[in-house]
Image 1 (tube, rainbow, N blue to C red):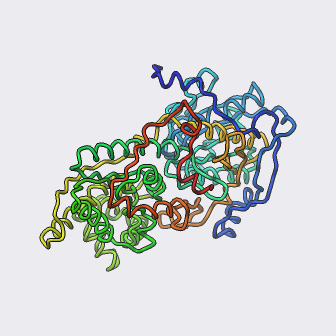
Image 2 (cartoon, rainbow, N blue to C red):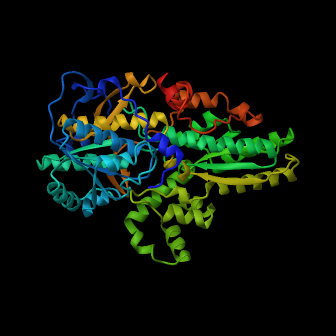
Image 3 (cartoon, rainbow, N blue to C red):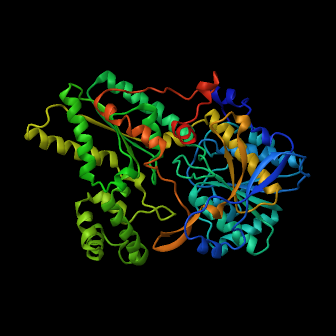
Length: 546
């Protein structure tokens, strides 16, 4: 394939591995420390993969040569660094035994079920080292959750003599990996399943997982773009930019980008929920910043809005929960009706409180909340133009204030949604190294006979040599939650902690940022140069690990 100058140069980059993964490796086991609620239920559902020890790889005698053909799956949305997970896995599998083979299942978990695959060879993998995207084998959102799928996948696993499957994905995908691992273990099929923590949203983390891969690169990519907009904003001095950022279920991306770029306003969904704020409260906060700056001759500014904000407004969150239950129980009764009939049906079956909230929403937003779901049962909030909804409500508020003499100024809004621009960027040095180490760890977990584990790398704010690699049992991160009207085992999403250091650092400065122009322009990701420029971590990780 045709390569850019950057791709050609990046092809020669050799990801740095922790010292513990260089050469001879042995396994050190410890007690699991990460657990959530409902553990008795989790133990009943996963009797064969529950209660296993934490694993850390340390330097030791050479592991015996292992004959292990491996299959790999990219699941869910793209994240920078996925190709390096595959590269690290490939190199370690071949190091363990040159005759070992790695097979990539095409277009996500569906490739396993449909027997669509490609063998990943040295020549093939070399084309994708240190590149962004998932185009090596493609990704998909098929859920692995039925016996029929598991057995169908087993057919191709047996045909290719595969001993283990590695699933690279987020919380939902790794939940599926845990379910698959339990099924194959219960049947004594001898097929191991290992997960890898991927999501740019940053919501797959806990005591054992410091960060999910892709978050570093994506937030740096978005922050470059936000910085460019801020500089244009400060040059033209006549527009208010409303920027929606990816992050359906948590505001980690918005918070990190705010810490990097210092916009005038950044809404944090978790704070909205915790303080039981209404949409009007949010509008008043933004309108107040606009009015203050206008009074000082600054009719311009930048507002960051997390993608999932709508779901975190408590009144709307309660509405969505009832709509989820209604859709699960009676969706077949109304999903094929015309729009007016659908709305009437839904209104008739909602509680009085939620009906009142539903009535206030624009038709387009109401329809998104009531009908459209992704394969995991989530509201597709990326399709809701929240940034336009917010700016229109701010404009209406300012118009009312102008009539009352409380606002004098000009308000010209512009809208942006930064999502797909960051998911396939060329990985930063951090993500290139981190992902390569995750792939290596996944191979070593397989060689150690583990199943139902997620590969992890810790101590990531230290020098790469001192990173710690190993694995954590996926069951230790699972909790029972309501999904599509049913209680199901899932990995709990990590939300922004309002008493955490990253949010506190933001909260300490946001009033100053709202009144003054304190923009920071990060510029593009740097791949070559001083380590303090090229290997710097996100503000979030640095503050959390300080």
